Amino acid sequence: MAKSFRPWEVEQTWWLPPSVHELVPATHAAHFVRELVRTELDLGAIYAAYGEERGYPPYHPAMMTALLLYAYTQGLFSSRKIARACEERVDVMAVTALQRPDFRTIGKFRVRHLAALADLFVQVLRLCQRAGLVRLGHVALDGTKVKANASKHKAMSYARMKEAEPLLAAQVQSWLDRSAAEDATDDAALAEQRGDEMPAWIANRQDRLDKIRQAKAALEAEAAAAAERDDDDQPPASAPPPSAPPPHHTDGTPTDKAQRNFTDPDSRILKCSDGYVQGYNAQVAVDAAHQVIVAQFVVAAQNDAPYLPRLLDEIRGNTGRQARELSADAGYCSEANLRTLARRRVRGYVATGRQRHAAATATGQRTSGLAARMAARLRRAGHRSRYRLRKIVVEPVFGQIKSALGFARFLLRGLAKVTGEWALVSTAHNLRKLIAAR
Image (tube, rainbow, N blue to C red; front, side, top):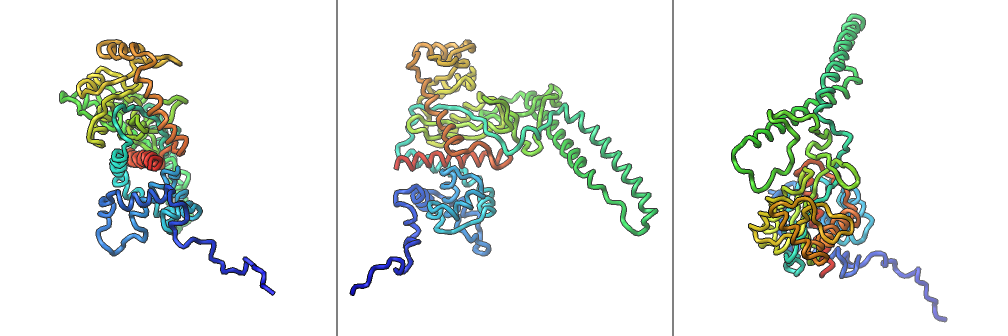
């Protein structure tokens, strides 16, 4: 009599595929990103950080780079979430070949190589160009306010600093005097036993006083430097400073409204559509063909207008040529910017005032000189104006980054670090476009 088939008695080898490449389908984005990093990207700047074999990292830098880039395309930005995905998600396992770096390793790798990782933005952009995703027929500019890794309630104005510093100093000094008196009493009573330690309840006040004094000194130094630049007869540089100086008087002292944050001093309180945030202003230029970001950087300033020339420089530097057309909202409208567009032979469509709801064109109050000609250009075209492309080119990119990917707040602190972080996010956005087009 034939023996019945019992599947549970078959050798149990079904739970793991013969190769990690089979964890996900061959067409999966995980394979694409891994092979792109391995074969297309130049990681020489990262490799150069490891000068000798002794102390060589246990995880290959190329694998760590691929892990970070793939994680960012999946909306995983926290090092802890990325480390957890290495243990739980098979698509991430296909990138790491089942290796499981912990969150400290991932975080340290990102910070150590942040500048080199940010430089990958241009390499990925060039790959997008080779794939035909960048045409530079029309480019739209815009800025978005991104929250800093700091609370706006941890900021203090210069006026408040001037009030708080003497009060805290007097309070701390009274505690020190009281502590000294108590120490003298304790020394007489306790003999050899110690009684001269500073009470714990003084420490926080003392630390806050030190922070206020440091922030006050920093504001005064920045205001003095800004006043000196104002008095300088030299023409301003083509690229404005990355961080806006605090409001200051002509004598180089800060105004009472000048503020500084204790957690992230480089960040600023910025006005956005839903109120005020402690954050940064992320600038991008987006190509209209496939919504690929062709230029990006971060500034600690409210206004967008000073940064249009810098965006044009970034576009040419990153792609090798300049856009033929450019659209931007009223935040970029100034006589200087319109002259810059004309001088560089870029046909501009820049709103001259705030656009009314459901209005066909964006014309408004800035109607002198070149702004008047721009207003007439937008008005003549009506609903067919090329300005209409701005809303369907650059604004969806911010939606994809903030809503789809979930990047609503910087994880790092300081202008230099958030600049690298925004470059990584922009690289991930362009990678998603490259993945969709493959």
